[in-house]
Image 1 (cartoon, rainbow, N blue to C red):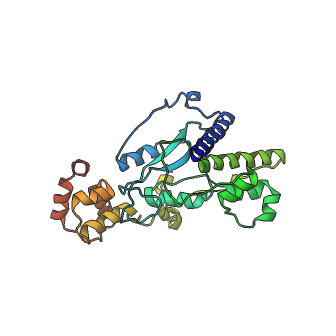
Image 2 (image 1 turned 90 degrees about the vertical axis):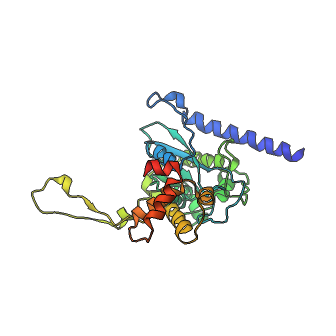
Image 3 (image 1 turned 30 degrees about the horizontal axis):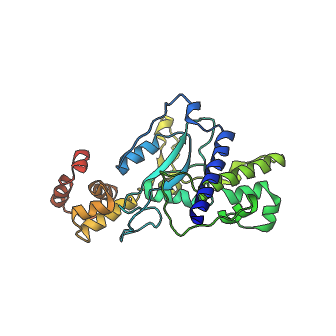
Length: 304
C-alpha cells in the first residue's frame, strides 16, 4: 500500500507541475481557431509521417508506445516497439508566433534519432545544459560540458531526485511522468533565471537543428547566365535508403522471411521493400518475386 501511495503522490505532483506549465504559456487547443483541433488515430506508419509533416508550429512531448515484447531484430534501441513499427505522440500547439521547439536533455541526439528512424527534420532543439550555461553562471562554474544529464539538472534547479528507470519506452496514453514533466519545469526555471538576470537569450547558443545528409553534403551551383533564378537549384547527393526500408529488404532478400512474419516485425513490409529498391537501384532483386510479394499485401499493392 505504501508503494501505491507514493506512486499516486508522484503522479499527482506531475499533473500539478504540468498544469502550471500549461497555464503560464496558455497552452490549450481552445485558444486557437485555425486550424480546428483534430484527433487522428492510425496504425499506418506512412500515414503518421504525412500527418506529422503537416504540422507547422511547436511540437513537444515525444513519447514511444509501450512495448510488451522485445523483438529480436532491433536495429535502433529505444525507438522500435514490439511490432517493429514505432508510434510517437506529438502535441501540436498551433501558435505561428512561437518557433518550432523541442525541450530535451539530449536535444540533438533525439533529433538525429527522429531523422534516422522517421525522416523527420527537427528545428529549434533546445539543449537544457547549453541553456543553463547561458542563463546561470553558477551552473557554468560547476559543469563545463554542453550536455548535462537531466537528473543533475533536476537536482540543482528543482531540488529533488529524478530516478531514471532502465526502460526505454513509455505509455503515451498515460499522464506525463516525472521525467517528462521535470524537463519542462527545468526549462521554465532557466527562463526565469534569464529574466531575473536581464540576460538576452540568443537561441543559436542553445538550440540546434537536424538537416538531411544530402543537404549538408550538397553544394549550390552558381550559374553565371541570364537564366531565371528558379533554375539555380542545389546539387543534392542521393538520399540513402530509409533504415526501415533496408531492414525489410534484408529480411526478404537475405533471410527469406515469410510475409506474415515480416509484417509482424515491420508492418507494411511491402512498402518498405519497394522504397529501398527505389532509393538504391543498385540493389539486386527479382521483379516477379517482388510483384508476387507486394500483391499479397493489399495496402502495398494499391499504393505501388
